[in-house]
Image (tube, rainbow over all chains, first blue to last red; front, side):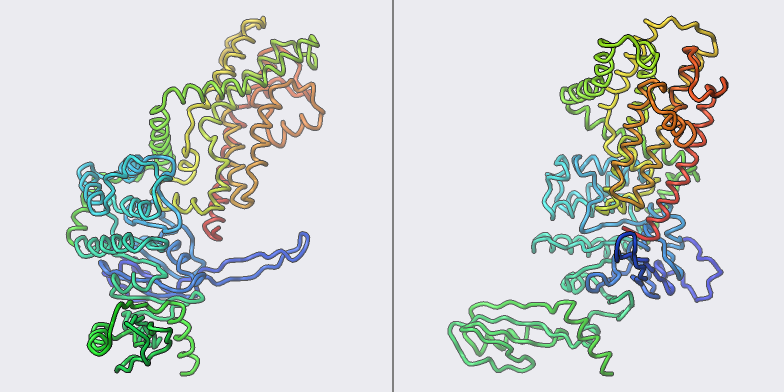
Length: 333
Length: 288
């Protein structure tokens, strides 16, 4: 690993693979207010954010739309130049040494592909092989592994534009990993995917992190992604870091609740069970809210033992609700 | 973790030895263009047809000139052979640039739909990646057509050749391509700021080549001044070609301007390079 420059006043550990120190990104937004006349407004998309990510960690980066998630990812990958603060990835300043950093990172944008749209999937991979100067044996091994785990075998000769969203996403993830990147950034990797595709992507990422020790930073709207993948979650809103810690802590702070939807055999009075409260009844269907930090299993067991249960499902709290409750909490404390 | 470190060590042997941006750019260009050529060649019949289509489509411009000469004997004091000479040189130079940089006008669209970001995370200069995208060998049609017309002009014209004039011919085509390249790159750089400006760029590139197909004598003096001193397209073919043909220069320019094209091309490319860097820097500080 590259040595970190000694000019930093903050104590930097060699393990801090990603290091942000009061990083800012300010945009000048021009709004037309008349013919040839415009108003300039400053937007602080990222407002003095500091955090570090050690090697091998898997971190979720969440927040509502326009919170500054993508802007952060763009600064970490060298696409955008920060307006202030200090940012290092693997000891490299991304905006100054974009191409040197590119060899060591992998990026997946959920909304747009990095693959060549009109060409078969395999053509993109062959080009990556040459462009990233991947040793032949490594390329063959990594491609085989991705093809097997992401089930790409039948898709290699299909032009990218003909792939479904889930297939394309798997194709993109493989493309980002062929050159053995030390860190993988994923911007909304499960957006728009069906349940099965989501599960496949998550399983793959979990294995990648566990087996190779690849550092993973992902932004998402889907709390289930975080729950199943990340030991650590960071919440950003209005360009500021609101929370940095384990997911359970977030639920405690946000007092968030999950919802258990229960279908009974017939209409019954509201279920009376410890830890949960009925929030809605509609014929034989009842909605029960319970703290998100609690396990659903004992609750389900108790209900199943006492009531004629037909079907049930658990709904996760959405991020917007958690964050808005975090705000309310801050305001009152 | 050790696994990943060991893996990374293998890459060190493959890492470029601090190669320059130009070398990196040319390498990336070659790789991307090569991929598109291979993909085009997978359908040879369709490739042949598109080359012919490009050839025929661009040849229509010359058909228009032929039609004119069926009514008149000269155009602005120039014979058909002399106009064909200008036409062929303009087409050959422009065709060369169009082949290499023809995809640059899609830059604005890339900024708008955000796909420029995907180029910025790859280990290759962005200019090379944008230029090589959708590399289309069918554009050889325009070059072929230009060279054929030039060949025709050389046959019908009775040029008093000197070694200097012979040397000037290839220099003219290459420098002309360089001047057009600068226009392509500067136009693309402008699209960082104004994303819908691809038509502005086209009016200078495609419009410029059409202008140069006709003798300078048919245009207003101010327009000729503009393409000599402001946007120096006159150095692509007009001035050097008039030297070869022993015809009078426009605007009473001295004889030696015929030998300026290489210098003009280098200066224009340097300027457009600066414009490109400024455009990319502004994109990276403001985003889309």
